[in-house]
Image (cartoon, rainbow, N blue to C red):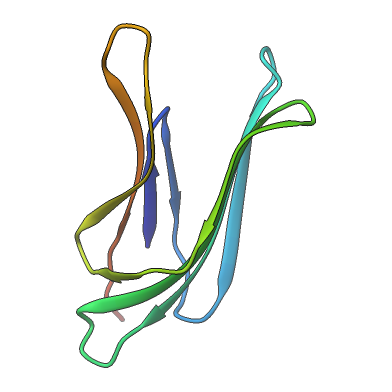
Length: 104
């Protein structure tokens, strides 16, 4: 499972090796955020290879586009985007990956 936080939350659940995606569009602002991820579980369930693409756009204008393929520690978050705001605070977009056990 991959969770992206920052300006809301996006959560995707998938099997190891399967690519999945989500896109959310706000009708009033025409702002769309999309997130695509493919997770590959390591042998010890401690690390996940993560290939992701994150896009933020308003209409056809791309505001942010990030693609990467880090190896992540299960349960830990990484920041993949951060920007300063006018009031001096920072707004970050971060991702956390977790392994969900399938129960019968």
